[in-house]
Each structure stands twice: as structure tokens, then as C-alpha cells.
Image (tube, rainbow, N blue to C red; front, side, top):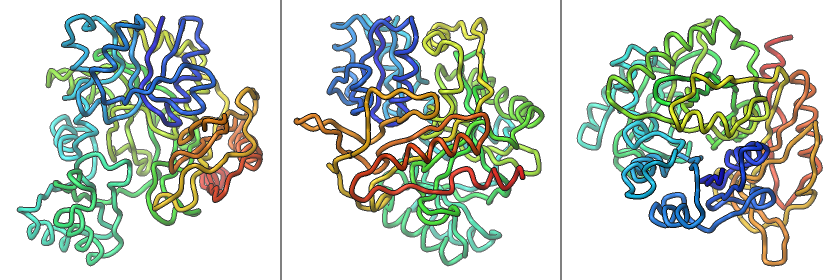
Length: 432
């Protein structure tokens, strides 16, 4: 098959790596891709939200399937665009409809959906600029800490956990009245703080059938000990020891099944991946959020553990035949450490030369996935984003996987490189 993959991050490099290793992939194109995808596939200079250009390219290059990596084109309706295209409506697009993408595109919509279909989640209220004063009154009644979420997409940074009522009131003002997150915070969801241990569960679905993929735990804060600002993700671990068979069964029965059935009852087409951010509270799952695609950097820790053919999985999703797909998962552990530009998630510089990379290197101990990288005119690999590389270590257990990830991370450098040294340490302490 000729496959078109959309996106340019570490998640997309991991997808590309998995896709090109399938005998069912004839040629892979990545729009727009990065320096990592360029070494294994053909990058094309088209934005994932330029639907007309993507359609023209798909016709000219006889594309057989489209895999959508990031959330923005899904929220903007790329699947609907291709479903309604006069000549490409037959093309499997792996990604939900615009209506389905509201599960991530609108926190208010997703909370209403969970409430309607009895999916366990935190209690909440939604406020706008017009109801700002009611929002302040609501905050004053809440126990601490208080969670504020921008309703729309905010690049993974639209969630604030406030430790005081004054902080929460100031944050609500910044979000609603000062447009801290632009249009994303035209509405703000204020919700109960859930206690427990976070993890992410990933589901592949064709709209009727589903397969639960390996779970992961990610690390959002920039600083060690989970301190500092939220980021797009600084690391991940898969599997998660506290997500045992009993817990995952509860997730399936209380979250996955009601969600898939709820989408069908709402007549919302949903083909693709569903990311369920969860809190494990004394062995019971509560949904923090839905995302309508795979997570990043969790994908970089999850995909290396999938043994069965990944292109077959995508095609089964896109053609409504997921029930006949046999998902095989490796028992090993993968840990991902994200290397970021100095200053991230605040201001940072691009264009720094990366030293220590070998694009042709292959190892059974670690894999380097590119996120924010580009190739210079002279062929050098440069930084081109806040999160630059995601290095996945593999091992029989968390300790050995972490050792392999950090050994590789120490070999790579550029001016201002930073990464957390404590990824997975909380889990190691938990299982001692």
C-alpha cells in the first residue's frame, strides 16, 4: 500500500518507523515530517490542515490509506473532507469524524458526553466570559486544589492545577477575560481534583469493534519531581505496574465500552485511536480527559511493544474489520525520555546543531525518535521545536529500560539541551 501519514512530531516518527517495517507498506509519505521521518520515508511539504493539497497529492500518488497523527486536522474535519470527496471517499482515513474529534476539541462536550453515558469522571461546571462572576463564586466553594481547563485545543498546556482559591480566581480571569489560551479559553471547565496515580490507556476502534493497546504513564511537568510548568510531555513508561489485569478490566467495562456505545448512539462516526487519560484512585478508574489520537510521547513507548503488523491494524480499523485482527503485545518494558530545547515550554531558540545522532543506527536497546528536528541545506540535523527528540529504551524491566534510554540520551547533545533525570523513578519506588 501507498500510505500518507500526517504530522511532524515524535509520535509521527514512531508511526513511520512502525509502518515502514510492515511488508504491507509499499511507500510511505509523511506530511510534513521531520529529519527522522526523512531517513525512512519521503517527506512532503504540505500542512496537515491543507486538505485540498493533501487530496491532490493522494490522487497523483495513488494513496491507499491516510493515517492522521495530530489532533488539529481531526478537529478541523479532515475525515469528513475525504469522506465527502468526489473521488477519494473510498479512501480509509484513520482518524475520527469532526463530531468525534469534539471529545478532544471541547472539554465541555467531552464532560457532557461522559456524564450522559455514566463514564466515571470528576464533577465539574463550565463558565464563559458572560458567567465569569458565577465562576468566581463556584471557585470559592471548592476544596483545594482546583483544576481549570481551557475548553479548546491548547497544545497540551491548557490545564492548570491551582493550589489556592486566589490562584484559581486569577487564572480564571487570565483565561476568560485576558484570553490566555486564545479562543481555546473562551470557555473554561472548572472541575474537582482527582487523587491517585495517572496513566493513559489507548484504544484502537473501527467504530464498532475495539482493541485495547498497551497502557502508559507519561510525565507532563518540565521539572524533576513533577514540578514547574506543564509541557507536551517529558517522558513515558509502558507497561504500568499498577494497571493490572483487574484494573484494565474495570477500564474496559466502565469507560471503553460505554464510550464506544455512546458514540454509536449519538451517530458519531469514530474510526481511529482513542486516548483515555485516567486516574487510578484506589483501584478505580476515573477519566481525566479524552484525546482523539495517540499520545506523545506515550506512542514512542507503546508502539515498540506491539508485535503484530501495524499496517494490518490500521487497515482493519479503516475497513471495519478490527474484530478479525489479532493484537500481539510484547512483555518487555519501554521507557521514553524527551530531550527539549533550553527554555521550553517558554521561549526557546531553534536551529541548534544536534551532535551524536546516527540516522542509520539500529539497536535492540534504544530507539531515537525525532520530534522537533529539520535537515539544513548542508545536511546537518538541527533543532526545530521545543521537544526535539524522544529516546526510547527497551529492557526486561523498568530499571534496565531506563538505563538504556538514559545511556543513549547522554550521547546526544546541542546547545541548551535539557531532559528530566527522574522519569520512571516514582514507579520504581512504588514497586520496591
